[in-house]
Structures are given as structure tokens and as C-alpha cells.
Length: 312
Figure 1: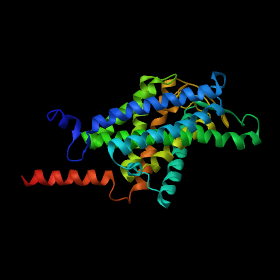
Figure 2: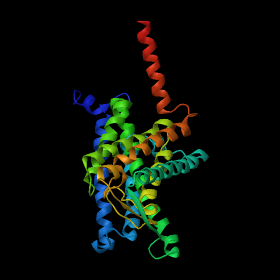
Figure 3: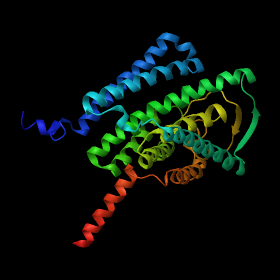
Figure 4: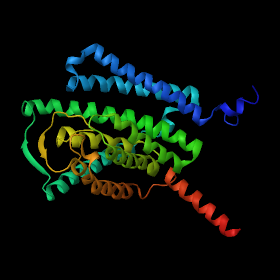
């Protein structure tokens, strides 16, 4: 047992090594996610699958399940607090959330502009199904269902638990690479996905990781995630990772899907690349003054290594 224990445990920290912690978390998270979907189908049945009611209920269950999963593993396996993943509540948290929403809104808007410049999109009509009164209810419901619920759950799990535990085990740079690759791979199970969509979603995953890297908190990433899904789907009428929603704008796309994204959404087409560039610029501007973050600490560690090598 004494020979096996160091393979399982970080004896200095008195807890499982990062790889084993991640394995426990993945098993717990997959189980609770499947349970959330099963409960949703059990309560509403398959006839309502895809409706806003179905997505709102599933969103509420997924938020509860994801939060419970991360808290349980963080508390009893990691022996750390949930808040230590980057959930400090203060005025800056609210500003980062709003900034993330605004950045994503600008990014999706740029996708529309790029497609319009090259004649790849036609805005057929602007009208919410059921009229204005329905929009006042429907838009907030969709914002929660595919914006807030998905952003909270995925960012807490991926850029919160997975990325930060990976970085403790294999270093920050490789952790970011693997987390982005994993993010792209899991979205390839969605309808109408392609190899290109997987690669571009991995790139989008870097933008989400950058929110944590540049602030040490998850709020900017969550705001970006919620805004991206909400503005591209319920507002501007694109598919959201292969899923169609009710929308305010009703566009018609033309041209090859590898350019526009087609039925999968903007993440499957190269027209999204300028938006990624805009996102990078805006996020760096937003976080330029931040200190004592994973980004600044990694930079300082690189400078120390460089100075040590030069001294030798």
C-alpha cells in the first residue's frame, strides 16, 4: 500500500492527485447531467422536447446538478471551497458579467456584418413569434435556458473545475490546450457538427479560458458564454451549436456552410474568425489592468526562468 499511495495521493497536500480528482469529477458530472435530462423528459415528456418550456426546466435542473456536482467534488475530493474556482462576489463580478455580454454581442454582430458584406445573409423579417407580448416573456426565458443556465454549468465545470485541476497536474499551458480540445470534441456530438466546427469551438474555448486566465475569476467567461448563445440564437436567429430556437430576427443564409456555419451555427464557418479576433482585442482591453491573475503569474514565472537561463 505504501508504494501505491504516492501514485494516488499528493501526500504533501493530503488529497488525491489531479488526474484522479478529474476522473472522479467526470464520473459524477456525467451521471448528474444524464439524470438531469432524464428528469426533464420524465416531467415534460418527449413531445415538448425543443420547446422553451423544456429548455427552461432542463436549464434549472442542470444548474442545480452542475453546482451540486462541482461543490461535492471540490469540497470532499479537492478539499477546497467552491468559491476558490473563481466565484468571488463583488462589484467587479457584475461589471465583468455585463462586459462579457457586451463583448459577445459585438462578436455576433460582426458575424452578421461579415456575412452581409459578402452577400451571405438576408434578413427576411424581424418579429417574435406571437408578437411583442410574447417576446417580453419568451426572450427572458430563452436567455435563462440557453444563456445563463448553459454558461453557469459549462464554465463552472470546464473553465472552473477541469481547467484549474489540469493546470495543477500538467501545467497551465498544456491545461489550456487540452481543455480547449476537449471543449471542441464534446460539441462534435451536436447535430450538424463538422470537423471545422470542432476546431472553431476549441478556439472559442480559448476565449472562454482567457476570461479566467486574465481575471482569476469566472464571471467574464460566463458573461461571454451567455451572451454568445443568446445573441446568436434567440436574438439574431442563427442556430446555436446545431439547435434552433425561437428568434427575433429571421435570417436566410446562402453560400457554403464552411463559410457561414450553416445549420450548426456561426461556430462552424470561417466567417466567425474576425469575431474571434475582435473578442481577443476586447478581452485584453477589458483586463489590461488586472494583476495577480493566472496570466500575470504565468508571465512572471516565464521571466524568472528566462533570467535563470541567462545567468547560467
